Image (cartoon, rainbow, N blue to C red; front, side, top):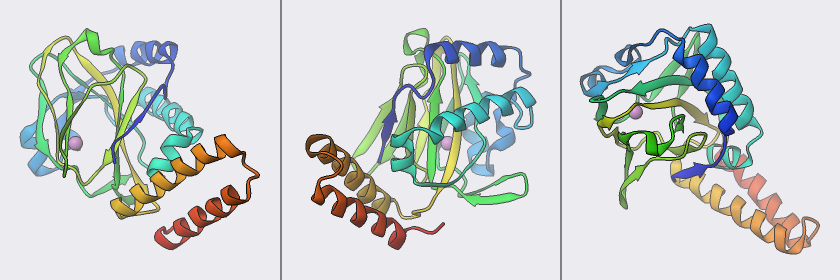
Length: 225
Ligand code: NI
């Protein structure tokens, strides 16, 4: 599933984030890459332990904690603290699959869901599309600043070389309560359909109540918490 989550950050917040990031020391992005992806990766990152980046990351997580689409699509158990990267002219990231296991301090978790939150308006750079492969082909993603794409961490993906400007983003992973992507997709579809039905007939409708119960009982069956 590819889920486009709009306006995780407002334009004002994006401007504020960019001003903070502007002042950071950027380092070679290969510090967080696995051995295969280090070969393909050319970008810059703010160090994971930079206090200002940590604080921005917390704000992203706060916004996502209130975002129904994110919760429905990710069913998050643990969310890795967001990191910040940039691709300047000539930089890109060749095809790779993200590491299956990551550490946030002493906490080890499985990466089920990958997220990229765009921090540069699409007209301000050329190239830099996030290209995600799935069984239906390739999907080139380039969103408005403040919007986020969520996709299965099992997917092969790449960032096309930037040919003009600079592409800034936050990126992170979540461990989902539901490990299996098709199960997660089914639950997401069901939840979206219940929301749509509920908007038509009201939350108190008997069928909506029953279907909501079915949804939660399926989360109990498929998920671990
Ligand atoms: Ni990646």
